[in-house]
Length: 383
Image (cartoon, rainbow, N blue to C red; front, side, top):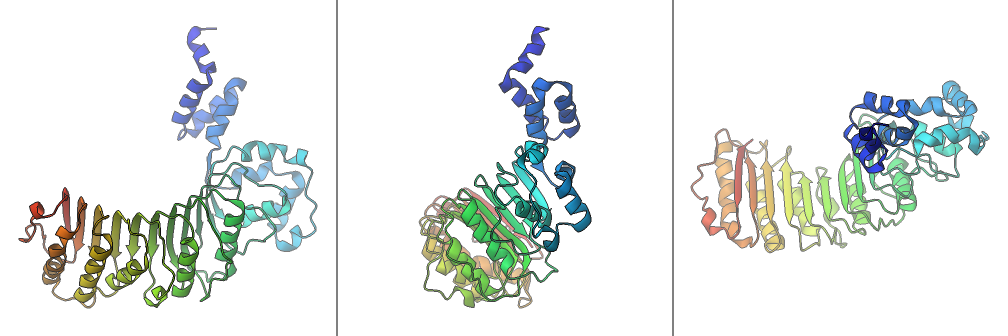
């Protein structure tokens, strides 16, 4: 054997080569077929990240495949169906155990297989899943493995989804995925004003993102549930009402990074209820709805009051508002309200401003960086 070929039998070298070929699926496929010694590592990378269920359909046991082709795993067809023995799942499992990241699309196929195999996880070593919920998840199945660290739940916004979809999904994740670190709920429309999920505690949840079209009361309940976890990063889209934050319960006591989408008034109301004293990065993005100067001034005062000793990065985007007319003048009025407060930020290093203006505001005369204690970078943009 040529000595240079022997290097490929060193697992670390072969692992590095296959990882570099992650985006070249054709080469990985050839590598897996050309030599049995290379097959396992090549297949691990080839099946690590899957965007569809289609490749798994031919791997199903024959009776399960027939059930899918003829009945699409309807509730009636699955009821009473006898799960095939373990040896008939051997081929399916050989590939399913390699998957680490799954963009599952519609959840119906995964839920169907999980219902048939109620005693085990379909993808036992999965770390990340993006799924589109279409119906409530049956409480008896195990949809998420305990290895799961990232969960993104989405759904078509044009469908008025059933109330229990999000509730059952969260309950399953809390029960079966104790090491979940990131949760993202997006693109949903709910027809409920209540969140009936029982108390949940994601002990390792560090990052949460909520960009769903849900009612204010449901969002408030979801925030209170997630506030029981050690969340340090939060990205949230606020609905057009502020009544949800009239709550005696403090929110997100461990928060360090916060991004809010909503009007200045909504952002100020939400920040008031955040109990964490150590937010280091704050982003407020206003894209629609009113943005009155009084609301902006109140927002700035609240930010200074709560985070003057912790904030290191501040980004503010104020878009054109239906209540604003002279946008150039408003941009200067906003800076007049903000800049006198800047010396109160003891550790602020970065300031990003996007303001409603037809002209650039770089030459604003009140910018005196030397009077701001730790500021290193200032950026202005006109929206």
